[in-house]
Amino acid sequence: MTQSLAKNIHPITEHGANVLYQHGTLALLVPGLLEGTTTIGELLKHGDTGIGTGEGLDGELIILNGVAYKVGQSGVAEQVPDDFTMPFANSHRAAFQYQCERNDIGLEELNDRIVEANGRANTFFSVKVHGTFSFMKTRAVIKQQAPYPTLLEVADRQAIFLRHDVTGTMLGYFSPVMFHGAAVAGFHEHFLSDDHTFGGHVLDAVLGHGEIYSQVFDTLVTHLPVDDPGYRNHDFSQDNIAEAITSAEGDTRTD
Amino acid sequence: MTQSLAKNIHPITEHGANVLYQHGTLALLVPGLLEGTTTIGELLKHGDTGIGTGEGLDGELIILNGVAYKVGQSGVAEQVPDDFTMPFANSHRAAFQYQCERNDIGLEELNDRIVEANGRANTFFSVKVHGTFSFMKTRAVIKQQAPYPTLLEVADRQAIFLRHDVTGTMLGYFSPVMFHGAAVAGFHEHFLSDDHTFGGHVLDAVLGHGEIYSQVFDTLVTHLPVDDPGYRNHDFSQDNIAEAITSAEGDTRTD
Image (cartoon, rainbow over all chains, first blue to last red; front, top):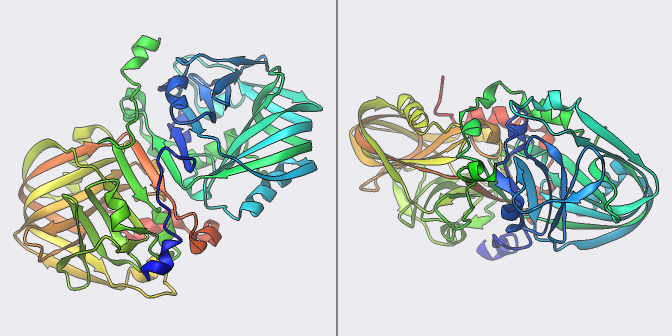
């Protein structure tokens, strides 16, 4: 028995390419626990690639090749310093595997195909698409001030951006349905144009032509802000976490 | 701002005392994905203290001081070897802090007081109680064979044990409500008598006299059996995970 199981027993490498690091949980954004409780500098210790949001939902963050960019309400990307703080973020060490090239495919179909190709709807993985998007619709939340509003209230306070024929990188994470609440079930994707003039949280897109890469994780490291009084004292049992996240985060699988 | 936040930003130490390691998720037990996908040897790399269950729900495991014991349908504890496999287990490196002594207190009140004392219903922590229990009710599931039944079906196939005035260690973990599904929300506690003649999954207890210790984690490392075909191919969306876990695992907060 031990021998036949050996192939299925995957030794963990906590600092390796199979680890997705997450600070915070999406559940804490629902009631408006938006204080920054980690920094870009800390996040970069766990990876060179990632996404997140700043304190008070200050912009949509994307980390590529160890450099962090923020897209705020102007829609333009700017580099952020190591001491920039965040309530929620993901990072990992890039070791993407090339999947395929695709032409003229909408975001929903693209995401469905990536899950199918991986055969891994029950695992966390990252997806990276570099290419020219014939259509890209993003949003950036407008930075909120304390006392912070709830995630549903904030959903109305966002800037929406549209671009055609924009070349850049879409980076995101897929989380299995059983982790909804801790993460966003399904895909959560951010975009950055190659010229850094445009980006944000992806709401919809059509890929004109591009290359698709993915990276599967066997380990999720969840780091919680246990010393933050707002987090420690909040009663999450009254928040309708799953529904609020699905509604506010604009799940890209809209079927 | 950075300065005032510094106290709330807790550097992660992935191999340190603030990390709870988990192999699998409770959600995979619900539809009967009971194949062993990690070993005691692997689990012990991540801690010297823990709980779990064997392949096919073979017994209730407890790890104390780096030694793993299994309580099966006989109710007697036996040491298990490093190659013993499990579908689900937790471990951590013991660095418990002494909390208090307590006399004549029931399990539910004891658990409530521990949460109150910690003020940490939103964090993962371990609790260890050593003392003499005037009453201890445990269960051990009877080992199942493949094709495995669901968790609800298995709940009827268990042995129940009762002891009075038994001295030993109750070890368990508390998981925040937002992680229900990945873990069991609330407490999940196992017991081992000092003489190893008795133990199991704690259903109810009264502590006559004992000492209470706890250890708070800021990081949960979740390791998933991503190469196990049963796990990869299962459609969890049809399982009523949250309700099935609450029903079958005998949440010790029975209010």
